[in-house]
Amino acid sequence: MTEHEHVRVAVIGSGFGGLGAAVRLRREGITDFVVLERAGGVGGTWRDNSYPGCACDVPSHLYSFSFAPNPEWPRTFSGQEHIRAYLEHVADVFRLRPHLRFDSEVKMMTWDTDRLHWRIETSSGFLTADVVVSATGPLSDPRIPSVPGIDTFPGKVFHSARWDHDHDLRGKRVAMIGTGASAIQIVPAIQPDVARLTLFQRTPPWVMPRVDRAISGAERWLHRQLPFTAQARRGLLWGIRELQVQAFTKRPDELGLVERLARRNIARAVKDPELRGKLTPDYRIGCKRILLSNTYYPALTQPNVDVVASGLAEIDGSTLVAADGTRAEADVIVFGTGFHVTDMPIAERVVGADGRTLAQAWETGMKSLRGATAAGFPNWMTIIGPNTGLGNSSMILMIESQLNYMADFVRQLGVLGGRVALDARPAAVDAWNHRVQERMKRTVWNTGGCTSWYLDANGVNTTVWPGTTTEFRGATRRVDLGEYDVLRAAEPAREETPAATPEPRTKSTRTKKVEAGA
Image (cartoon, rainbow, N blue to C red; front, side, top):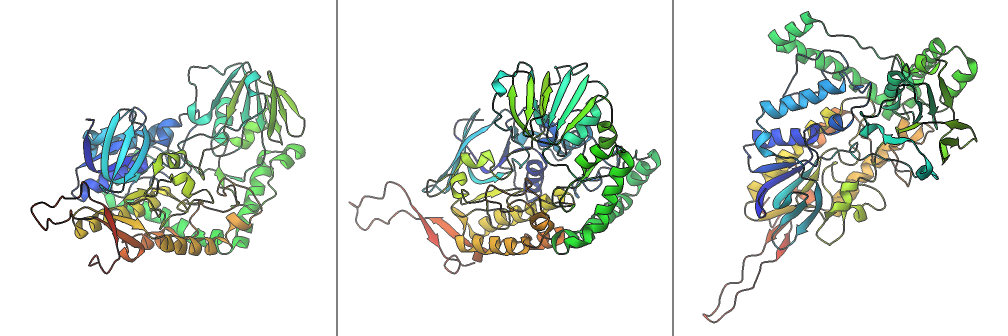
């Protein structure tokens, strides 16, 4: 990019959110935009997570854009390589390559109050943008806990999202830290090859069978020839999940049947009562994300696997010590400990109108207006923002809803005309957040008796949406200018006499909705 490049919109990240934003901008007739990507290729979390066994736990036909259906999905639940290939295909089909700026990590984004635009410093240069769409995603920056003594470990250490494919695990003693969605895929994938596998489990997950199969050639042919059949398949998958939402958000007791099925799943696969006891959660199913696997429990019953029902407390050389005192030797440590979700690092790199970073504004908890905009950060939006996550369905549905909001946001700027910006009103942000948190009180995520990554350091659920995807789509269909302050650049003072001196630069002014003529 050139040093003084200016664009109408800068999109940060090239995963589902970033590529979706780019497609929507083009469909709105906007071509003056760039997609800034810190890595060397598209894909986001599906580029970074390439660990053994990596796959999606949402059905393929639902985990894809509605405007870019894929009749060629090979399995009902697709693997990482197929999803990344799909995103590469989207970038090609929608002609996004000219807009992509790889190896351009955003270092800082600063709002220029006088010029009403964002100044963006990247690892490849500088640019300015009228609007920023942050699509870095919550699963982009790995979280590795600070474990006393980790510097003394002589072996290899890496996070599941930064898998070291050059390090051969065959014949090694491997310690897997964590039991989340990544771990239950990694464990059965590496168990047959390692000498010993020790799983450090702080909290056991609820695991249900994964109804996965190859999609036949006949099915793929049908979806190619008759696209409405793929649409019907997607609609059925979506509808089932919409019907399930009530149990998660309003009537958690209705999850009792699902919990009984999950207990039977454990009983069928794990015959040893002691091991079965370790693997049985003591909280309501759904409080943490329900995981899907047919191979996780069988892998844990193998003779070369040990399950430590306690978190990792310290490391002493090659000896790992659990909180309950259990000790295990290891040559390799794999952290499957999740990501910075409620404290996204990108927030430290966004400086708003009052000079505060977004991280400072969110010190007491993340909150935004309709999961998209934050008070004090004009013309800045996020995709997959606060309280837009899902516990039982496809995030692509939520992303597409936010793309609707983004499109109308940019459209409204055009209608208002001139050098203009929209800044979410604090009262509107607070009102939206209050409604969300009131609804959150009776959800299984707040009442299920667990501690999950859905909750922030203050115990507040700033991650999940407490409703259906249909409700969220309705709430983000259009931008309500009554929820925003309209910022306009002041016109230079008129010269009253030939000797009058104009102001050296313009200043922005806040205009109420009525004054803006909206």
